[in-house]
Image (spheres, rainbow, N blue to C red):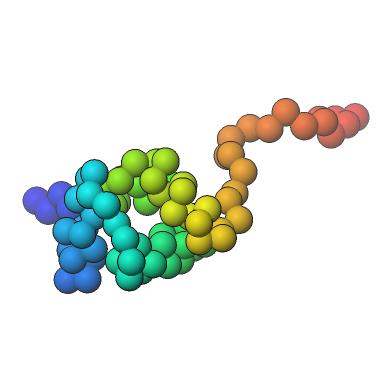
Length: 86
């Protein structure tokens, strides 16, 4: 039984570059920021991106902010004005 989905060679290389706690600079940082932005804009959550890259939520949040991404609001129920049920 296969538990993990296949990763492309490029994703494996990015994962190797992103070992937890390692510093990401230069072209690798720009590439990572672009990849995260593309996936976030396609609907991926920050938590999902953090898990996928092996980095922290804060790291991914910071990378997205540095990329100029407009972050989505929190999900879940909102406490807005209820519509009349009459």
